Structure formats: structure tokens, C-alpha cells
Image (cartoon, rainbow, N blue to C red; front, side, top):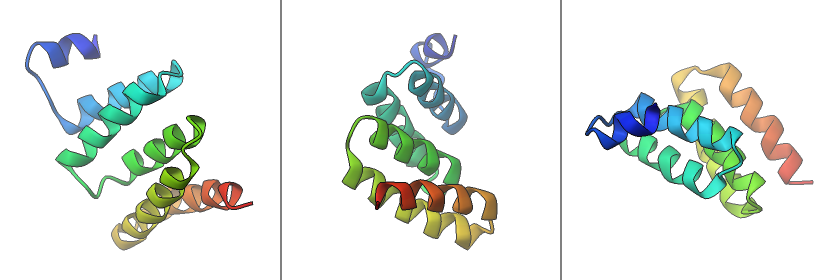
Length: 98
């Protein structure tokens, strides 16, 4: 359904985030990354997209990109007061740095 919305010309932050999330669950990491990056084009301070993008990079063995994404996401989340997202990304980042 989300893909058909995009194909019909609808495009938005939430649509791209939803597609990225759905594709991540289906283990289609490169497609998920593509849509999450597009979501961040709409709003480069959307901390939830950084969290999922970091996860997608990590699951596709792109650990340095995952680390960079989490670090940027933490900075943005803390700046916006999104404490829960920042905490979660710190946990994921700590696991990657082991």
C-alpha cells in the first residue's frame, strides 16, 4: 500500500519513514536505507529516522555508517529533548563500539 502511494505521486516524511520501517522488517536493508535517507531529506532532525537508519546500516554490516548515524541522531535527539530516542541510540552505539 505504501509503495502504491509513492508510485501515485504522494511523497512525504511519514510515507518514506513507513516504507523504510516496513522494508527493514522484511530485511530489505538497502531499500530501507534509501527510503530512510529520503525521509531525512524531508526533515533532517527526525530522530526516529536516524534510529532506524542506524539499525539498517548495522544489520547490513555497514558499522561505520551506523556509528556515524547514531552519533548524529543522538545529538539531534538531545537537542530536541527527545530523550528516549537518544537513550536507545546510545545503547545501540555502545553495542557497535564493543
